[in-house]
Every structure is written in structure tokens, then in C-alpha cells.
Amino acid sequence: MSKPMRFEVTPLAYFASLVADDEGFALFEAAVSIAQDEYPQLDPQAVLAEVDALAERLRRRLPADAPPLQRLRLLNRYFFHELGFAGNLNDYYDARNSYVNDVLARRRGIPITLAVLYVELATQVGLVARGVSFPGHFLVKLRLPRGEVIIDPFSGRSLSREELDERLAPYRRQHGLVGDDEVPLGLFLQAAPPREVVARMLRNLKEIHRTAEDWPRLLAVQQRLVVLLPQAWEERRDRALVLAELGRHSEAADDLEIYLRQRARADDATALRERLLELRRLGQPRLH
Image (tube, rainbow, N blue to C red):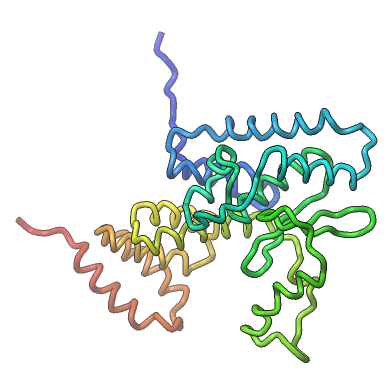
């Protein structure tokens, strides 16, 4: 009797299935799966099970009728003090800070990975928590009966409106959002859609690998960004430029062609049309 054929699902295909539509977007699982580019043998389900076990340990300590504020206090003590999660001040730009499995193992991360873990645990103990794409520093927002609480997952501190305004001041000045044009603080504290959270995680890695000129790792990140944001044509352009660096000229040309078709009037269109011609020439098979 012949054995049934087994089909291996690639990490990219697995990621694509998690982020295919906004309705069933698997935020935490997608965030975990990003690390498969660095750790091909990583089992995302094992990481999810580890976090489930951490949540279960906390749940057992909570009275069934514990009010939200008590749940929040216990969660903060558990996450930041007992488990010891904190921001990685010593090596902020270490790529491992962007991999959830590494953050779990080392108890150190950057705001967004710490926030993703914190929100997952908060949700599992019955709290309403969401990530917030605050300019320059990802935060967590919790909805309680008497109002919202904003937590900095990097330090574990609860932030007042005055502190948030102070943090926002440089961004407002830089973008001319002061005086009559000042935008209310509340607009910067809206919950980030799951797709935006994963994009921000990937763009952190993108910047790390681009700075290091680590083209193979950068390509892996760009592949995910194109899958995650199929209408973000700039991500396809950026993938083209990475493919060109890796000598994959025909693929790079195909991506550039799509970008130029969608962004014909972009500031970089003229220069990229010349680059496209060069890539098409380089991608032609040689005659022997």
C-alpha cells in the first residue's frame, strides 16, 4: 500500500494563510511565525503553547469574579516582575528583539514584541487590550470600566496624558502639528489594526537588515511585506532592489515593472525606468 504524499508548507505560505484576510487575521501567530526566516526549524505551535501555559498559570491565581483592575494589577506584577519581561536597553537593535520566541526565552525585547506578548496574555485573562502605534514607541491600551489605561511595555509603566503629550511633542513639532493645527492626543492612541502591527514588526527588521546590507535576510522580510501588504507598491519596489543586489535580475525587473505601472508619476519613476532597462539587459540569457 503506497504512503500518502506529504506536502511541506513553506514558512511564507504559512504566513500568507495567517494574514490572508482581516476578518480571521491571526495576529499573535503571525508575529511568532516571522522568526521562521531566522529559525527554519521553529515550531510556531510550540511557542503558542508556551504562552498559553504562562497565561494558564496566571489564570489559576485570579478569582473567577476578579474585576478588571485587579486582573490588570496582577498581570503587570506577573509580566514585568515575576517573569521579568523588559526592554533590551543594552542591545536595542539586535534582530532577536523582533523574534517572539527569542523574547520569550531571553525576557528582553523592543516595545512592539513586548506589547504583542503582553496583549496576548491580557486577552487570555479576560482583559480588553490592544496595541497602539504611537509615534516612535509602540504602546498598549487597556479598556477598563472607568476609562483607558496606557502601558509602556518597554518599562512597564502606566502613562498619564501629560506624559503622553510630552512624548508626542517632538513629533508634533517635526510635522507642524502645533498651534491651530494641533491634532488631539486621542487620535494617536487609537488601536492599531493587526495588519499594521505585523507590518511595523517587519519594518523594524527591514531597517536592521538594510543597515547591515544583509540582502538574503532583507529579502525574506520583503517577501513577507509584499504578501502582507499587496497594495503597498513601494514594498514591491524595495523587493526589486534587494533582488537586484542578489543578482536575480529578471525577478527584480518584473517587480519594478509592476511598481512603475502602479506609480507612473512617482518621484523615483524616471530613475527606476532606466534601472529597469538595465535589469532586463542583465537578465537576458547569454549565448554560448
